[in-house]
Image (cartoon, rainbow, N blue to C red; front, top):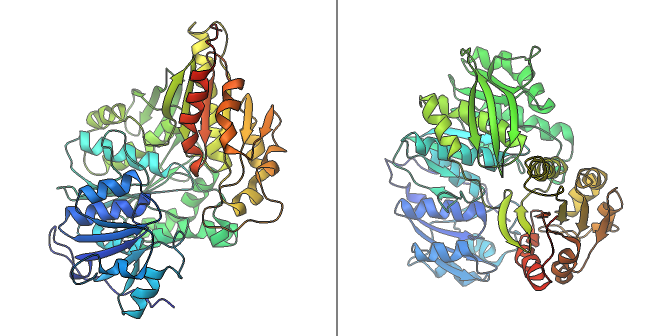
Length: 504
Protein backbone atom coordinates (compact mmCIF):
# COMPACT_ATOMS: atom_id res chain seq x y z
CA UNK A 1 0.00 0.00 0.00
CA UNK A 2 2.76 2.48 0.95
CA UNK A 3 5.09 3.90 -1.67
CA UNK A 4 8.91 3.89 -1.49
CA UNK A 5 10.21 6.74 0.65
CA UNK A 6 11.21 9.83 -1.28
CA UNK A 7 14.56 11.54 -0.86
CA UNK A 8 14.59 14.58 1.41
CA UNK A 9 16.38 17.58 -0.02
CA UNK A 10 19.29 19.44 1.54
CA UNK A 11 18.73 22.28 3.99
CA UNK A 12 20.68 25.47 4.50
CA UNK A 13 21.69 26.32 8.06
CA UNK A 14 18.73 25.96 10.40
CA UNK A 15 16.24 26.16 7.54
CA UNK A 16 14.30 22.99 6.90
CA UNK A 17 14.28 21.29 3.50
CA UNK A 18 11.03 22.04 1.63
CA UNK A 19 9.65 18.55 2.29
CA UNK A 20 9.76 19.08 6.06
CA UNK A 21 8.26 22.54 6.32
CA UNK A 22 4.67 21.29 6.77
CA UNK A 23 4.55 17.90 8.48
CA UNK A 24 1.73 15.74 9.83
CA UNK A 25 2.80 13.11 12.39
CA UNK A 26 0.75 10.01 13.14
CA UNK A 27 1.37 9.01 16.76
CA UNK A 28 2.89 12.38 17.60
CA UNK A 29 2.81 11.85 21.38
CA UNK A 30 5.29 8.96 21.42
CA UNK A 31 8.77 9.46 22.84
CA UNK A 32 10.53 9.36 19.48
CA UNK A 33 7.90 11.19 17.45
CA UNK A 34 7.40 14.03 19.92
CA UNK A 35 11.13 14.69 19.85
CA UNK A 36 11.13 15.05 16.07
CA UNK A 37 8.14 17.39 16.34
CA UNK A 38 9.98 19.59 18.86
CA UNK A 39 12.96 19.98 16.54
CA UNK A 40 10.78 20.70 13.50
CA UNK A 41 8.90 23.39 15.42
CA UNK A 42 12.15 24.91 16.72
CA UNK A 43 13.45 25.13 13.15
CA UNK A 44 10.38 26.98 11.93
CA UNK A 45 8.31 24.11 10.62
CA UNK A 46 4.54 23.77 10.80
CA UNK A 47 3.50 20.57 12.56
CA UNK A 48 0.20 18.79 12.98
CA UNK A 49 -0.41 15.36 14.40
CA UNK A 50 -2.68 12.84 16.00
CA UNK A 51 -2.45 10.43 18.88
CA UNK A 52 -4.66 7.91 20.61
CA UNK A 53 -4.68 9.81 23.91
CA UNK A 54 -3.82 13.04 25.64
CA UNK A 55 -0.40 13.07 27.26
CA UNK A 56 2.13 15.44 28.72
CA UNK A 57 4.00 15.29 25.42
CA UNK A 58 0.89 16.24 23.44
CA UNK A 59 0.14 19.18 25.73
CA UNK A 60 3.73 20.40 25.44
CA UNK A 61 3.64 20.26 21.65
CA UNK A 62 0.35 22.18 21.53
CA UNK A 63 1.95 24.87 23.70
CA UNK A 64 4.74 25.13 21.11
CA UNK A 65 2.26 25.63 18.28
CA UNK A 66 1.52 22.14 16.98
CA UNK A 67 -2.04 21.29 15.93
CA UNK A 68 -2.78 17.94 17.59
CA UNK A 69 -5.98 15.90 17.42
CA UNK A 70 -6.84 13.02 19.75
CA UNK A 71 -8.02 10.05 17.73
CA UNK A 72 -7.26 9.11 14.14
CA UNK A 73 -9.30 10.16 11.11
CA UNK A 74 -8.66 11.02 7.47
CA UNK A 75 -9.52 14.70 7.90
CA UNK A 76 -6.67 15.13 10.39
CA UNK A 77 -4.58 15.80 7.28
CA UNK A 78 -6.44 19.11 6.96
CA UNK A 79 -5.28 20.49 10.32
CA UNK A 80 -2.58 22.56 8.59
CA UNK A 81 -3.57 25.19 5.99
CA UNK A 82 -2.82 23.68 2.62
CA UNK A 83 -2.25 20.26 4.14
CA UNK A 84 1.08 18.60 4.90
CA UNK A 85 3.97 18.17 2.48
CA UNK A 86 4.74 14.82 4.13
CA UNK A 87 3.22 12.46 6.68
CA UNK A 88 5.55 10.91 9.25
CA UNK A 89 4.92 7.66 11.11
CA UNK A 90 6.79 4.84 12.86
CA UNK A 91 7.52 1.25 11.92
CA UNK A 92 5.98 -0.56 14.87
CA UNK A 93 3.37 1.57 16.59
CA UNK A 94 1.09 2.60 13.72
CA UNK A 95 -0.62 0.03 11.43
CA UNK A 96 -0.70 0.65 7.69
CA UNK A 97 -4.50 0.61 7.89
CA UNK A 98 -4.48 3.81 9.96
CA UNK A 99 -7.01 6.14 8.25
CA UNK A 100 -4.51 8.98 8.03
CA UNK A 101 -1.95 6.81 6.25
CA UNK A 102 -4.63 5.50 3.91
CA UNK A 103 -5.70 9.07 3.15
CA UNK A 104 -2.10 10.19 2.61
CA UNK A 105 -1.66 7.49 0.00
CA UNK A 106 -4.95 8.45 -1.65
CA UNK A 107 -3.79 12.07 -1.90
CA UNK A 108 -0.28 11.06 -3.05
CA UNK A 109 1.28 12.69 0.01
CA UNK A 110 4.64 11.03 0.73
CA UNK A 111 4.76 8.94 3.91
CA UNK A 112 8.14 8.97 5.67
CA UNK A 113 9.37 6.91 8.58
CA UNK A 114 10.69 8.71 11.66
CA UNK A 115 14.33 7.59 11.16
CA UNK A 116 14.37 9.09 7.65
CA UNK A 117 13.31 12.45 9.06
CA UNK A 118 15.79 12.26 11.94
CA UNK A 119 18.60 11.47 9.49
CA UNK A 120 17.65 14.55 7.45
CA UNK A 121 17.69 16.74 10.57
CA UNK A 122 21.21 15.50 11.38
CA UNK A 123 22.68 16.63 8.07
CA UNK A 124 25.32 19.31 8.40
CA UNK A 125 26.12 18.30 11.98
CA UNK A 126 28.83 16.20 13.60
CA UNK A 127 26.77 13.22 14.69
CA UNK A 128 27.38 11.27 17.90
CA UNK A 129 25.13 8.22 18.07
CA UNK A 130 24.63 5.66 20.83
CA UNK A 131 23.34 2.17 20.13
CA UNK A 132 23.24 -1.19 21.87
CA UNK A 133 20.69 -3.59 23.31
CA UNK A 134 20.64 -1.85 26.70
CA UNK A 135 21.71 1.51 28.09
CA UNK A 136 21.15 3.64 24.99
CA UNK A 137 18.95 6.27 26.57
CA UNK A 138 21.02 6.67 29.74
CA UNK A 139 24.34 6.84 27.87
CA UNK A 140 22.98 9.26 25.26
CA UNK A 141 21.58 11.45 28.02
CA UNK A 142 24.86 11.44 29.93
CA UNK A 143 26.63 12.54 26.76
CA UNK A 144 24.16 15.36 26.14
CA UNK A 145 24.34 16.76 29.68
CA UNK A 146 28.13 16.49 29.65
CA UNK A 147 28.49 18.39 26.37
CA UNK A 148 26.10 21.06 27.63
CA UNK A 149 28.26 21.48 30.73
CA UNK A 150 31.33 21.80 28.49
CA UNK A 151 29.76 24.80 26.78
CA UNK A 152 28.37 23.12 23.70
CA UNK A 153 24.73 23.49 22.74
CA UNK A 154 24.13 20.23 20.88
CA UNK A 155 20.97 19.30 19.09
CA UNK A 156 19.67 16.03 20.43
CA UNK A 157 16.98 13.38 20.19
CA UNK A 158 16.72 10.76 22.90
CA UNK A 159 14.22 8.10 23.95
CA UNK A 160 13.49 9.54 27.39
CA UNK A 161 13.19 12.92 29.08
CA UNK A 162 16.38 14.28 30.63
CA UNK A 163 15.66 15.18 34.23
CA UNK A 164 17.73 18.37 33.89
CA UNK A 165 16.08 19.65 30.71
CA UNK A 166 12.61 18.14 31.06
CA UNK A 167 12.64 17.33 27.36
CA UNK A 168 13.62 14.54 24.97
CA UNK A 169 14.80 16.68 22.06
CA UNK A 170 16.32 20.07 21.31
CA UNK A 171 17.51 22.11 18.34
CA UNK A 172 20.84 23.51 19.48
CA UNK A 173 23.00 26.32 18.20
CA UNK A 174 26.12 24.16 17.93
CA UNK A 175 27.33 21.88 15.16
CA UNK A 176 26.91 18.64 17.17
CA UNK A 177 23.88 16.34 17.01
CA UNK A 178 23.59 13.60 19.66
CA UNK A 179 21.01 10.86 19.24
CA UNK A 180 19.99 7.41 20.30
CA UNK A 181 20.29 4.97 17.39
CA UNK A 182 17.52 2.41 17.78
CA UNK A 183 18.37 -1.07 16.54
CA UNK A 184 14.97 -2.63 17.25
CA UNK A 185 13.74 -2.23 13.67
CA UNK A 186 17.04 -1.72 11.86
CA UNK A 187 16.47 2.03 11.64
CA UNK A 188 19.99 2.80 12.92
CA UNK A 189 21.15 1.99 9.38
CA UNK A 190 19.60 5.28 8.22
CA UNK A 191 22.37 7.23 9.94
CA UNK A 192 26.01 8.05 9.09
CA UNK A 193 27.70 8.81 12.43
CA UNK A 194 31.01 10.52 13.08
CA UNK A 195 31.16 8.90 16.52
CA UNK A 196 29.28 5.71 17.40
CA UNK A 197 28.96 4.01 20.78
CA UNK A 198 27.83 0.40 21.15
CA UNK A 199 27.05 -0.35 24.79
CA UNK A 200 26.32 -4.07 24.40
CA UNK A 201 24.84 -6.64 22.03
CA UNK A 202 22.51 -9.34 23.30
CA UNK A 203 19.68 -11.21 21.62
CA UNK A 204 16.49 -9.12 21.41
CA UNK A 205 13.79 -7.98 18.98
CA UNK A 206 13.56 -11.37 17.33
CA UNK A 207 9.98 -10.49 16.38
CA UNK A 208 11.56 -8.19 13.79
CA UNK A 209 14.92 -9.84 12.98
CA UNK A 210 13.91 -13.49 13.17
CA UNK A 211 17.35 -14.82 14.17
CA UNK A 212 20.16 -13.89 16.55
CA UNK A 213 22.52 -13.72 13.58
CA UNK A 214 20.41 -11.11 11.80
CA UNK A 215 20.17 -9.02 14.97
CA UNK A 216 23.94 -9.13 15.54
CA UNK A 217 24.66 -8.28 11.91
CA UNK A 218 22.85 -4.95 12.16
CA UNK A 219 25.57 -3.67 14.52
CA UNK A 220 28.32 -4.66 12.05
CA UNK A 221 26.43 -2.80 9.35
CA UNK A 222 26.04 0.20 11.67
CA UNK A 223 29.81 0.30 12.27
CA UNK A 224 30.36 0.24 8.51
CA UNK A 225 28.35 3.47 8.20
CA UNK A 226 30.85 5.43 10.31
CA UNK A 227 32.39 8.36 8.48
CA UNK A 228 36.06 7.97 7.50
CA UNK A 229 38.24 9.26 10.33
CA UNK A 230 35.47 8.62 12.85
CA UNK A 231 35.42 6.81 16.18
CA UNK A 232 33.74 3.60 17.35
CA UNK A 233 33.46 3.11 21.14
CA UNK A 234 32.60 -0.39 22.43
CA UNK A 235 32.12 -1.97 25.86
CA UNK A 236 34.70 -4.72 26.38
CA UNK A 237 32.89 -6.15 29.42
CA UNK A 238 30.06 -7.27 27.15
CA UNK A 239 30.74 -10.40 25.06
CA UNK A 240 28.62 -9.15 22.18
CA UNK A 241 30.31 -5.78 21.73
CA UNK A 242 33.73 -7.35 22.47
CA UNK A 243 33.11 -9.69 19.53
CA UNK A 244 31.97 -6.75 17.41
CA UNK A 245 35.29 -5.02 18.05
CA UNK A 246 37.16 -8.17 17.02
CA UNK A 247 35.21 -8.44 13.77
CA UNK A 248 35.26 -4.85 12.59
CA UNK A 249 38.56 -3.40 13.90
CA UNK A 250 40.64 -4.45 10.85
CA UNK A 251 38.30 -2.90 8.30
CA UNK A 252 37.76 0.20 10.47
CA UNK A 253 41.54 0.75 10.44
CA UNK A 254 41.53 0.64 6.64
CA UNK A 255 39.14 3.62 6.64
CA UNK A 256 41.01 5.58 9.31
CA UNK A 257 38.35 4.90 11.93
CA UNK A 258 39.60 4.55 15.50
CA UNK A 259 38.08 1.82 17.69
CA UNK A 260 38.33 2.33 21.45
CA UNK A 261 37.13 0.06 24.22
CA UNK A 262 36.05 0.64 27.80
CA UNK A 263 35.50 -1.87 30.57
CA UNK A 264 36.82 -3.25 33.85
CA UNK A 265 39.61 -5.63 34.93
CA UNK A 266 43.01 -5.81 33.27
CA UNK A 267 41.53 -6.19 29.76
CA UNK A 268 44.75 -7.86 28.63
CA UNK A 269 42.95 -9.68 25.83
CA UNK A 270 41.23 -6.58 24.47
CA UNK A 271 41.14 -6.62 20.65
CA UNK A 272 41.32 -2.80 20.52
CA UNK A 273 43.02 -0.07 22.59
CA UNK A 274 41.36 0.57 25.97
CA UNK A 275 40.30 4.19 26.25
CA UNK A 276 38.91 4.01 29.78
CA UNK A 277 39.08 1.32 32.45
CA UNK A 278 36.73 1.02 35.42
CA UNK A 279 38.82 0.30 38.52
CA UNK A 280 36.15 0.41 41.21
CA UNK A 281 32.51 1.23 41.86
CA UNK A 282 31.24 2.00 45.36
CA UNK A 283 27.51 2.60 45.97
CA UNK A 284 26.72 5.85 47.80
CA UNK A 285 23.11 6.87 48.47
CA UNK A 286 21.21 6.66 45.17
CA UNK A 287 24.41 6.79 43.16
CA UNK A 288 28.04 5.93 43.69
CA UNK A 289 31.75 6.70 43.40
CA UNK A 290 33.48 5.67 40.17
CA UNK A 291 37.25 5.18 40.09
CA UNK A 292 38.65 4.89 36.58
CA UNK A 293 41.78 5.36 34.51
CA UNK A 294 42.12 6.87 31.04
CA UNK A 295 44.56 5.80 28.37
CA UNK A 296 47.74 7.83 28.53
CA UNK A 297 47.24 8.75 32.19
CA UNK A 298 49.09 7.14 35.10
CA UNK A 299 46.94 8.47 37.94
CA UNK A 300 43.36 7.16 38.36
CA UNK A 301 40.48 9.61 38.43
CA UNK A 302 37.20 9.51 40.33
CA UNK A 303 33.73 10.91 39.81
CA UNK A 304 30.53 10.80 41.81
CA UNK A 305 27.43 9.70 39.94
CA UNK A 306 23.90 10.51 41.05
CA UNK A 307 22.44 7.42 39.38
CA UNK A 308 22.71 3.89 40.81
CA UNK A 309 24.36 0.76 39.51
CA UNK A 310 27.70 -0.42 38.19
CA UNK A 311 26.20 -0.49 34.70
CA UNK A 312 25.76 3.28 34.96
CA UNK A 313 29.47 3.63 35.75
CA UNK A 314 30.25 1.86 32.48
CA UNK A 315 27.74 4.04 30.63
CA UNK A 316 29.53 7.09 32.03
CA UNK A 317 32.86 5.89 30.61
CA UNK A 318 31.25 5.45 27.19
CA UNK A 319 29.86 8.99 27.34
CA UNK A 320 33.25 10.31 28.45
CA UNK A 321 35.09 8.79 25.48
CA UNK A 322 32.48 10.08 23.03
CA UNK A 323 32.58 13.57 24.55
CA UNK A 324 36.39 13.59 24.45
CA UNK A 325 36.21 13.00 20.69
CA UNK A 326 34.62 16.46 20.31
CA UNK A 327 37.68 18.10 21.84
CA UNK A 328 36.03 18.80 25.19
CA UNK A 329 38.29 19.13 28.24
CA UNK A 330 38.49 15.96 30.36
CA UNK A 331 38.05 17.79 33.67
CA UNK A 332 34.97 19.54 32.30
CA UNK A 333 33.62 16.21 31.04
CA UNK A 334 33.98 14.64 34.49
CA UNK A 335 32.20 17.60 36.09
CA UNK A 336 29.43 17.28 33.54
CA UNK A 337 28.95 13.59 34.31
CA UNK A 338 28.76 14.42 38.01
CA UNK A 339 25.90 16.80 37.23
CA UNK A 340 23.86 14.17 35.40
CA UNK A 341 20.61 13.65 37.30
CA UNK A 342 19.12 10.75 35.39
CA UNK A 343 16.42 10.08 32.82
CA UNK A 344 12.67 9.76 33.13
CA UNK A 345 11.76 6.15 34.07
CA UNK A 346 15.36 5.04 34.71
CA UNK A 347 15.45 4.19 38.44
CA UNK A 348 13.35 7.30 38.91
CA UNK A 349 12.22 8.17 42.43
CA UNK A 350 8.42 8.19 42.55
CA UNK A 351 7.82 8.93 46.22
CA UNK A 352 8.08 7.81 49.83
CA UNK A 353 5.35 6.85 52.28
CA UNK A 354 5.46 5.11 55.65
CA UNK A 355 9.20 4.47 55.38
CA UNK A 356 8.93 2.80 51.95
CA UNK A 357 10.56 4.32 48.86
CA UNK A 358 9.00 3.70 45.46
CA UNK A 359 11.00 3.88 42.22
CA UNK A 360 10.07 3.34 38.58
CA UNK A 361 12.18 1.81 35.83
CA UNK A 362 11.76 1.05 32.13
CA UNK A 363 13.69 -2.27 32.25
CA UNK A 364 12.03 -4.80 29.94
CA UNK A 365 14.82 -7.27 29.06
CA UNK A 366 16.30 -9.82 31.52
CA UNK A 367 19.72 -8.14 31.50
CA UNK A 368 18.17 -4.76 32.27
CA UNK A 369 16.03 -6.26 35.04
CA UNK A 370 19.11 -7.84 36.58
CA UNK A 371 21.11 -4.59 36.46
CA UNK A 372 18.35 -2.56 38.13
CA UNK A 373 17.74 -5.12 40.88
CA UNK A 374 21.47 -5.41 41.57
CA UNK A 375 21.62 -1.62 41.93
CA UNK A 376 18.63 -1.66 44.31
CA UNK A 377 20.19 -4.45 46.38
CA UNK A 378 23.42 -2.44 46.63
CA UNK A 379 21.42 0.56 47.81
CA UNK A 380 19.69 -1.19 50.72
CA UNK A 381 22.85 -3.12 51.65
CA UNK A 382 24.89 0.08 51.76
CA UNK A 383 22.33 1.73 54.04
CA UNK A 384 22.52 -1.22 56.42
CA UNK A 385 26.34 -1.05 56.48
CA UNK A 386 26.25 2.69 57.09
CA UNK A 387 23.88 2.23 60.03
CA UNK A 388 21.02 4.09 58.37
CA UNK A 389 18.77 1.07 59.10
CA UNK A 390 18.58 -1.33 62.01
CA UNK A 391 18.35 -4.11 59.46
CA UNK A 392 18.65 -4.40 55.70
CA UNK A 393 15.61 -3.25 53.76
CA UNK A 394 14.09 -5.54 51.17
CA UNK A 395 13.69 -5.04 47.44
CA UNK A 396 10.17 -5.64 46.10
CA UNK A 397 9.61 -5.50 42.35
CA UNK A 398 6.32 -5.14 40.47
CA UNK A 399 7.14 -6.41 36.99
CA UNK A 400 5.06 -6.14 33.84
CA UNK A 401 6.35 -8.24 30.91
CA UNK A 402 6.45 -6.33 27.62
CA UNK A 403 5.46 -8.00 24.32
CA UNK A 404 4.19 -11.57 24.02
CA UNK A 405 7.06 -12.58 21.73
CA UNK A 406 9.71 -11.33 24.16
CA UNK A 407 7.93 -12.97 27.12
CA UNK A 408 7.76 -16.32 25.32
CA UNK A 409 11.45 -16.14 24.42
CA UNK A 410 12.79 -14.97 27.78
CA UNK A 411 10.30 -16.22 30.40
CA UNK A 412 12.90 -18.37 32.18
CA UNK A 413 15.55 -15.62 32.01
CA UNK A 414 13.08 -13.08 33.39
CA UNK A 415 12.34 -15.42 36.28
CA UNK A 416 16.03 -15.80 37.10
CA UNK A 417 16.63 -12.04 36.96
CA UNK A 418 13.56 -11.22 39.07
CA UNK A 419 14.76 -13.71 41.68
CA UNK A 420 17.39 -11.13 42.68
CA UNK A 421 14.54 -9.28 44.44
CA UNK A 422 13.30 -10.31 47.87
CA UNK A 423 9.68 -10.42 46.74
CA UNK A 424 8.12 -10.28 43.28
CA UNK A 425 4.72 -9.30 41.90
CA UNK A 426 4.27 -10.26 38.24
CA UNK A 427 1.52 -8.63 36.17
CA UNK A 428 0.12 -9.79 32.87
CA UNK A 429 1.86 -9.00 29.59
CA UNK A 430 1.64 -5.51 28.10
CA UNK A 431 1.15 -6.49 24.48
CA UNK A 432 1.72 -3.07 22.87
CA UNK A 433 1.68 -3.71 19.10
CA UNK A 434 1.32 -7.52 19.36
CA UNK A 435 -1.65 -9.87 19.49
CA UNK A 436 -1.74 -12.38 22.39
CA UNK A 437 0.01 -15.74 22.06
CA UNK A 438 -1.64 -18.86 23.54
CA UNK A 439 -0.26 -19.70 26.97
CA UNK A 440 1.93 -16.59 27.18
CA UNK A 441 1.07 -14.47 30.21
CA UNK A 442 2.55 -13.22 33.45
CA UNK A 443 2.13 -16.62 35.08
CA UNK A 444 4.69 -18.01 32.63
CA UNK A 445 7.28 -15.64 34.09
CA UNK A 446 6.14 -16.07 37.69
CA UNK A 447 6.63 -19.83 37.63
CA UNK A 448 10.37 -19.31 36.99
CA UNK A 449 10.89 -16.99 39.98
CA UNK A 450 12.56 -18.68 42.95
CA UNK A 451 11.89 -15.98 45.56
CA UNK A 452 8.40 -15.33 47.01
CA UNK A 453 6.28 -14.43 44.00
CA UNK A 454 2.69 -13.32 43.37
CA UNK A 455 1.03 -13.44 39.96
CA UNK A 456 -1.44 -10.55 39.86
CA UNK A 457 -3.48 -10.18 36.65
CA UNK A 458 -5.65 -7.39 38.14
CA UNK A 459 -3.68 -4.14 38.19
CA UNK A 460 -6.32 -2.41 40.30
CA UNK A 461 -5.32 -4.58 43.26
CA UNK A 462 -1.59 -3.92 43.12
CA UNK A 463 -1.50 -0.82 45.32
CA UNK A 464 -3.14 -2.45 48.30
CA UNK A 465 -1.26 -5.72 47.75
CA UNK A 466 2.19 -4.11 47.68
CA UNK A 467 1.35 -1.88 50.64
CA UNK A 468 0.69 -5.07 52.58
CA UNK A 469 4.02 -6.58 51.55
CA UNK A 470 6.35 -3.62 52.10
CA UNK A 471 7.83 -2.61 55.42
CA UNK A 472 9.85 0.31 56.74
CA UNK A 473 13.14 0.61 54.84
CA UNK A 474 11.99 -1.44 51.86
CA UNK A 475 12.40 -0.34 48.25
CA UNK A 476 9.58 -0.97 45.75
CA UNK A 477 10.27 -0.78 42.01
CA UNK A 478 7.58 -0.69 39.34
CA UNK A 479 9.26 -2.13 36.27
CA UNK A 480 8.49 -2.53 32.58
CA UNK A 481 8.00 -0.63 29.32
CA UNK A 482 4.19 -0.54 29.55
CA UNK A 483 1.61 1.14 31.77
CA UNK A 484 3.06 -0.35 34.97
CA UNK A 485 4.56 3.12 35.41
CA UNK A 486 1.07 4.32 36.41
CA UNK A 487 1.06 2.10 39.50
CA UNK A 488 3.55 4.15 41.50
CA UNK A 489 0.93 6.59 42.74
CA UNK A 490 -1.46 3.73 43.51
CA UNK A 491 1.18 2.01 45.63
CA UNK A 492 1.96 5.25 47.46
CA UNK A 493 -1.76 5.72 48.16
CA UNK A 494 -1.89 2.20 49.60
CA UNK A 495 1.13 2.87 51.80
CA UNK A 496 -0.33 6.18 52.96
CA UNK A 497 -3.59 4.53 53.98
CA UNK A 498 -2.06 1.89 56.23
CA UNK A 499 -1.06 2.41 59.89
CA UNK A 500 2.48 3.71 60.51
CA UNK A 501 5.05 0.97 61.13
CA UNK A 502 8.01 1.04 63.45
CA UNK A 503 11.54 1.32 62.09
CA UNK A 504 13.53 -1.74 61.18
